[in-house]
Length: 538
Ligand code: AMP
Ligand code: DBH
Image (cartoon, rainbow, N blue to C red; front, side, top):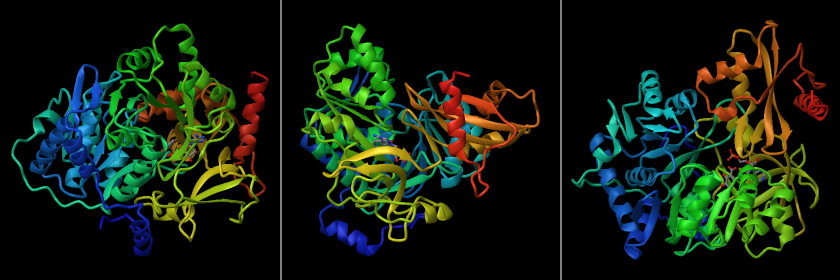
């Protein structure tokens, strides 16, 4: 058993097996099955390149053999940082086949985050593109490798320089693959987190495949699905709700978009006759605006999902009419629970709610500060337990005590209310996090980076409302250096090497922080201060 991983208790596992949620199938087997049933159907399209199910299966196998030759073993951790490319899938399924565990980092992560993922998991390999969006990943990998002594292999899709090339690892020579079962760990997803560094979310084949299967059913995916992946495929939403894994499970076709801009996505929708895609709210706004002035045929679109952050009713109302398709709201989390509005729901539900749990086995509670259930319709903290919601983060004992209840419910940190018929409306959040248009920022993580600056005595980060992103971040800083500027702190954070979305949008220099009656920093007061300033445009 992997150290730091809390397995499902036997009685819970038995329950989810006997009620049919967990079938024992693995991701490697799903691909094999699809390659047998629909060998010549196109699984993936990237630019001019197309790959059938049979080819994907074969290439994943050859790469699996290559990984074994390299010495990568079952349960070894591999940080995977690939963009929306066919290679992402080949590497991913190759790792699944050998039971090695990818950590799905995002293209925007930089050396501080990557070093932490590698160190925290004792990763043996790190897989990257050469250059993407003008960022040199090979250079970054060199720096990470210098710091992490467990890291043996840097594997590059593209110009590998002194490292290994993915393509060159494909092996014709067959070796025995290890036996992988449904209850084995499959990979780690990342949590946006609220404290310190991002938490790692361990997922087994059983539980994740259940969520994929259930999502496919609810979202009615089939072999006729043409899914445009515009958000990073490594993100839990794009991966599994129903996302790219859902499309592969259903035998459909994934079209990989290198970026989410209308100028890239709209021509792809027209050319490939896309019928399903997933957006975060700010992108939905951009697409709605762009549609007015661009003349592409987007009539093939049947469903646009919006999730990752609260979609305002004003935006939600426009999605359907703008694109002549259905809007599906998706409120999910990499830790598990996913809520969907259903495809035949009335407009009222699609516009004003964030959907309802996808599974009849999801147990949700809405509670007050004392963990007591509130009345239906009242606002409270959302807790959840179920067949695809984790019971512990990886290697995070102290945090787990706070994040989960004694009876195994995950404290989502979301403040919601429930309608009479079980739909959830997200009202706010009790976690110390900023949701910047779907990109989550753990306040404490960025505060810690700021505190490492010699002139920063204290830092507190809060959200400020924003018409486009929903929220942006504002850092309140106490410094003894009156010359210190926000620009200097931005440059400091950039040099540290962190994802750009974590860099505060605004800095406010103050002499002290407002306090709660208990003497803690009152983030509520800080949020009010910045809201007042914004209202008076200071
Ligand atoms: P993470 O735990 O990092 O995967 O982030 C999941 C969190 O994103 C949820 O707990 C919510 O706070 C937020 N979220 C995701 N989808 C929605 C949505 N449709 N509406 C409001 N908040 C959302
Ligand atoms: O924000 C998320 O993490 C998210 C949103 C929608 C998610 O993980 C999901 C669906 O599965």
